[in-house]
Length: 188
Image (cartoon, helix red, strand yellow):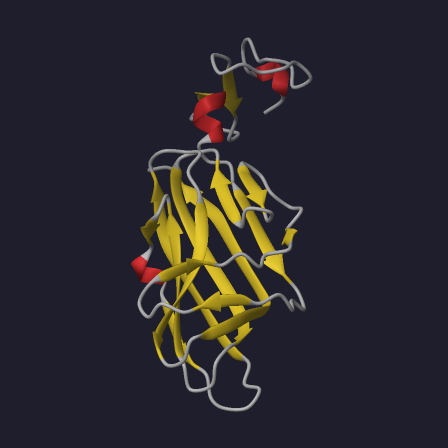
């Protein structure tokens, strides 16, 4: 179906507003129309922050207490509707919806110590994405990763990643390589 076959079709070169109707032609008698706002509900949103070959240390002392990871060094540089802020170690979605959130960390810490990584949204733990790892002895580099689904009902709140010592010695942790990311799956 050519553009001219749909009555009152807005020229693609013209800027759309939320009130404009877009026509979706399927070549048959079931052509559909929708507003730009409805169409954007299906658009992706994504972003991430990361550290590569990190060497900064962070003190982890209180057993059971959560400490925000502050070692992310770069924004992904590829984002849409998610504000990447590695200087504050957060991601901030600008649209509501269901998001797949995930992280991966390779890290060093204290011998024979168990750590847990927990992502938080607006200060609330995302418990379906917790990862625990006990480091061995020597210069062990541990790895943890997890993903979970987050229902973002209010945009402009922050996603961050925390670490807590479960058992073992107090001391420093270094995130050698790591990333924190989120991808919008759809609306709520």
